[in-house]
Amino acid sequence: MQVVKAITVLPGTPASVQLDDRPEPRGTDDALLVQAIALGVCGTDREIISGAYGWAPPGKERLVLGHESLGRVIETPQNSGFDKGDIVVGIVRRPDPVPCPSCAVGEWDMCRNGLYTERGIKAVDGYGAERFPLEPQYAIKVDASLGSLAVLLEPASILAKAWDHIDRIGARTRSWSPRTVLVTGAGPVGLLGAVMAQQRGLEIHVMDLADSGPKPDLVRDLGGHYHARMLPEDFRADIVIECTGALPVLADVMHRVGSDGVVCLTGVSGSGHRLPFDFGAFNRHMVLSNNVTFGSVNANRAHYQAAAEALAKADRAWLSRLITRRVPLDRWQEAFQRQPGDIKVVLQFEPDAA
Image (tube, rainbow, N blue to C red; front, top):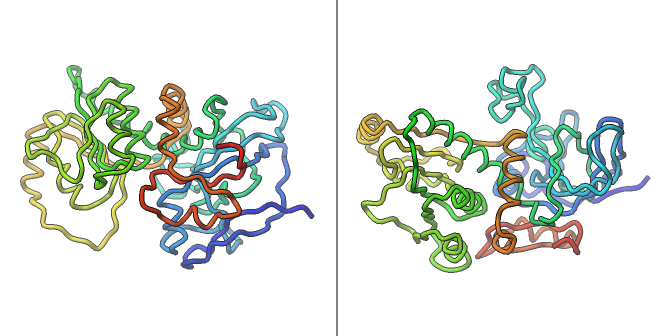
């Protein structure tokens, strides 16, 4: 029996992550067989490794980790719409089996009953293996000229959804014409949100804790304004995209949006922490200014396609600077260990694909 290397974890058990041998998957009549090129690493992976999150597939103890995929099709069923050699990214979420009204129309990112599954996160093995099966309806063909930068597609899809919903909410008034966006957090999600703001012609402001390293220059090279640790007291924006989940930042940005403004929350906060917060002042500001605050998570196929278009339009050299570390498979543990200056860490299954 031939085997492939796969990164697996025992959900709920801290420090159980390991590199396993798994039976080599085979192509089927309803799935592509994909050779892994690269795998992006994010905070969700580290949460699962810590034992705080994640579910194994039914009937199994271990979960194959990884949801930010990039691979090459090596086997394909007939009439799949894909060819051998196509570069693809796998969508993360799968609709629930009921399905709920949202899942029934392909908006599984808006699942109403929580019965969805997610590759590498919830009840379905992920993409952290040398080869993996991928159903054609959940595969996105990407521009080959992006090369290994296409591994950024999954986090970019999160921001494509955020911008889609911001645009829809803004359209509630026919006169809405935003000029300024504030992004809090200059990680990969925040910076990808900023590049999409640039593509919309908006004035960009990004706030992050870092006062040195690559982040300030990345923002400035977009033509944006970088704010280390704090904003001017009187600063206001038409749109706020909050990407940190940090409670002091959340409490501050609620008041940083101007009239008819929109605040999109993409960062997930931990529970059990309290801050003094003047909810009355917040309510007054929201009501009298016609503001909207909403949360956004995950993405559907349309958002992946929009993200692919945004990445294709972005400057390749700028995108490449988001990937601050590339780790080969034989040193896979290093990919999940935070290091100073990290923005996006990528595990390379193909060493020559950088």
